[in-house]
Image 1 (cartoon, rainbow, N blue to C red):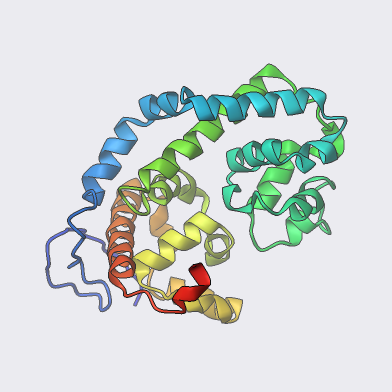
Image 2 (cartoon, helix red, strand yellow):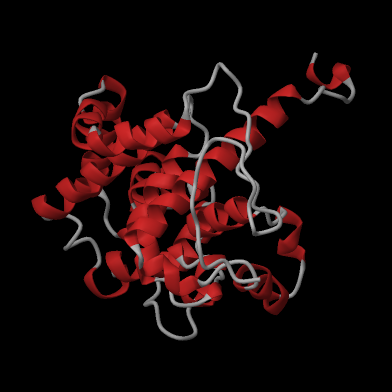
Length: 268
């Protein structure tokens, strides 16, 4: 059944769509996700500014600017761990910072049809490669004050959003989802984007094990429960982001409550 109506409430209630019960219980130690989302959206500018002023972030950005100024070429810049952290994080690839070889292979060649950035299912690499355009511009564009400032702002914002997740699991993804989902026209785009995939599958109750199924099966799992055209509706997107937050909070609470098993000696 395709989801064509989406009235969200945090109170238990009957729902005509099987598998879409809105009765969730969040752990008391966590921040209520819906007011947290509203507060984060309202306080975004102040929050990012405060994060940019953080001494650690300032040191990281200073090291990045110094690396950009002295690197002989993009390959040398990407080989610099501190510079790579800022550059990839600012381009939405914060979970890929440790993969230096992958970053070089994906970002240095021109992002044409046969390039690694285009062939990877993770579409963030293609977007970053096109934005940086190292193959054609080298470090010239990156060294302009406007671009450096834009990267610094983006880095501070990601660091700010990461901090939000400590009290409200999934809040960073929910904020990002609201700003990026408007361009989605098919399920392939959802599956190829780390944030969109996480938000949509968690909100719809689709298990992570679906990643082991063929792409067509993964797409059907999404489109059978969600009319993607509704993602053009700002009100629906807001409701969907809130549903995701509630589900993410429930999952976090369940994980935190689960007993830890294994060989204790491994950690001694």
